[in-house]
Length: 420
Image 1 (tube, rainbow, N blue to C red):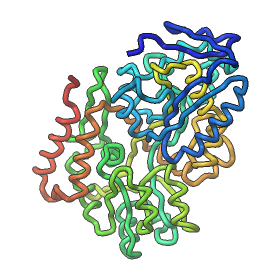
Image 2: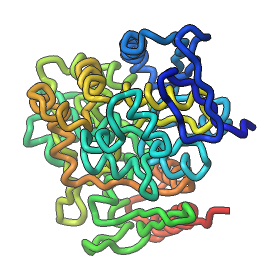
Image 3: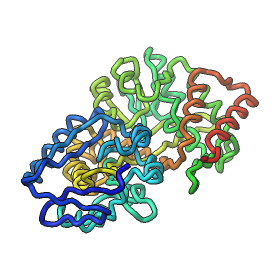
């Protein structure tokens, strides 16, 4: 294990507050950095890295870019932190596990040197981004990541040549319209990110404890007076409809491109794919309501951000921090939106006409009223994925209250198990 954090920095000044500092001039060997980002971002990252190297052209860089999804970054990194990339993108719900494992650099420790090189402070970075995104990137008062994207949630895309705006408002009418057209509505149920939307909408909650265990009340009665059993019955009725297609986690893009869907629940990362398939019918809106008894309940959603962090064991940790900030500054977020329709957290970028007029971003904003920042521990994911898959496969019956309650009790027991 590395016992020090070595820093390559500009010769003028980069006195990093770390246990060891190495300063080299521009004439010395190249500054080695590794960067991980989503597969869909590879071309964008190459372009941004080229601009970074041009900005700091007095120095030599060798920056290697690799593929790692934001959704799986934590699992890959924690397998071997020292072998992970120096700079990496990740979903905001992973920050506590990464900090607790010592994988993320505390950026505030490098603020003075950061100011000398970049010409701005971390307080400037904080002020440039939305307050909630900065709060989500902060642990115990310290900044551990740079906000990159503010649309890490999901909503409904639909083909308006098949489904009207009114029909898109509820699962009942949405599925009916899809069935009449011989099409399907796609959604991932085998993920606690997506299936939580039904429970959050019905007033149920999740929260994370200091020991990283999770609180979950889905097997009881919510603050809205709705039982978890009734929520599951609604989900089973939706999943059992012939116009519904359960999509495996991570396979939404492929299913969209297959052409059999007239509506799909996904996020801005699939905007280009959906627009390409739906063409002139391309439309997006908040999630539909679902039927509980004789009541229509608005679906909620898990909401979060995407960050770029710095590996605490990066050999050139100072330059890694500079690169991470460069990849998330106003210009980079503006370029990311133009290339991928990814919603910014930067206040200037998000206020631009292009962002404000974007259908997918507008849908995120509409759904955000019903969004919940999902804070859960590591034991949340496997049980909720299995539970959702059981619903997708019809392993529970909507007329078996006792069986549903038992399944919910098993789910909560697994999710809330103590962290060893």
